Length: 111
Length: 111
View 1 (cartoon, rainbow over the protein chains, first blue to last red):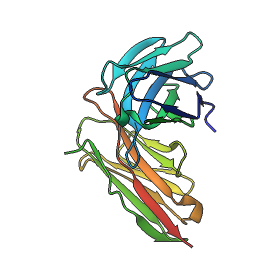
View 2 (view 1 turned 90 degrees about the horizontal axis):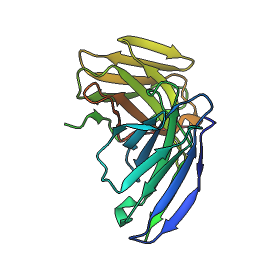
View 3 (view 1 turned 90 degrees about the vertical axis):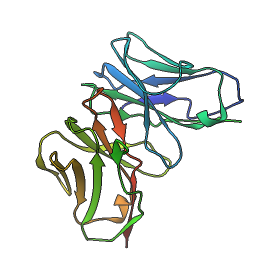
View 4 (view 1 turned 180 degrees about the vertical axis):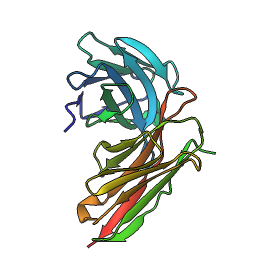
């Protein structure tokens, strides 16, 4: 167990809706990253937050947004959901911003 | 060329033998590499990271990095059925400081 928690575990949404996923970092880790993992693929980097500021972003559209809070917990928001957004969403915290320690993930299904 | 490439497998190895997993990367300036293990339906778990050329050993696992040839490998000695999983290779790309994952190699240890 990494000490990173995520909620909810599973979620079903309809195309066009909005969703918020939550993550609580491991104690002492001030960097959090979010990844999307489609079936049979490796995790794809969405963005990273360090001390409440976004400090890196992957090739995802602006409808993917995030927040990091003073206690280093984090949210991933996705607007205007599309069918292709169905995936496992992984939060990872890091003490250095390099090695990633993943939470259990949130399985999002968009219908 | 994909930034981090792995053979998807499956790689079948008899119990007790050495499993050898390989990964190549495109960004010659990349410095840091990681191996994750992912069981079906679970999130990735960090096994090892390596920053320097050569070998790094941790228990039954040995990571090898060859920067001149741009490849990373993971050796698992005395393979056990519990080692059956997907192994993800990841690299911190020097170009933009993003961590890029390969698609993973499925490893099956035959009892």
